Image 1 (spheres, rainbow, N blue to C red):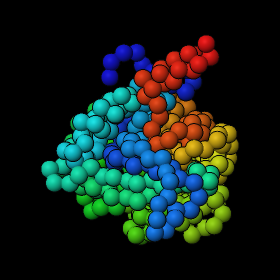
Image 2: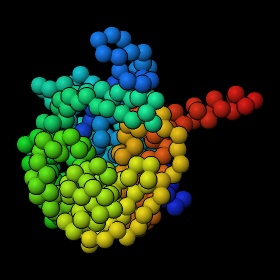
Image 3: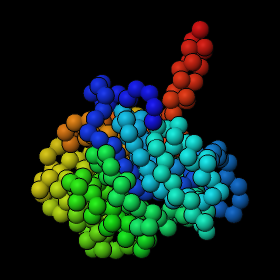
Image 4: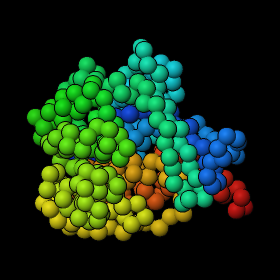
Length: 328
């Protein structure tokens, strides 16, 4: 990327090397409706098609939060590669997209109930993103990288699991910390909990949601679940939605970070926003608790927007201009 470095969460230029995200790039079809879906007939909705994917969203939020060098390795179909590359570049991310010759770009239908705290339900066709494989990897991708982040969606295909082993092994050999977001409670059940825990045995930072932490430990209390997970992973940052976040190490919760107040419009990508801002803050030299606070701030901003991405600089400028015109 060209130009001056974006500001980090403390107001100064971010440092600590680049962030490399390996994960999914998909097309989101977001349908916002009021109340339960009407079976067998029509339900009025406002529908938008937006760029998405947990890995891509994390990368864009990290760039938005001040990480000056964010790179994304993902796999898409030829049907939409140009659109996704442009969206990522506009979001401050360097796209490293592999074009799949056989599969289309993944698509996720996001059903958002505006009468239920903007809670969302996903219908997922992962498409080309599930075909990301070790053949798409090169150790040179880690040149200049300070942190490697892996989307949990990689674990839901054999080729993705092989890539996780390859990429995390290469990062460990260079002393680069590795983080992972479990991604989906539903898919975790299909994968198998013990299998998941064995796959993340060498991860440095795990960023589960409250439901994912409970599922992975079999513990109903959110704090106890986060503490239990931290016996397996050095640092656990458990996202608690409207209750903020928990930071746990060595079997104990070290901090309870409050949420930032927000009025939800769409909760799609809120966890990705948290993760992106958290990683950007770590790279800027902020400690885990302070980074979790930045994650909560980003999550609050995310739920007030439709879709899983932050505003691009052009969108932010247009919004500011529009407000100025209306105020005048």
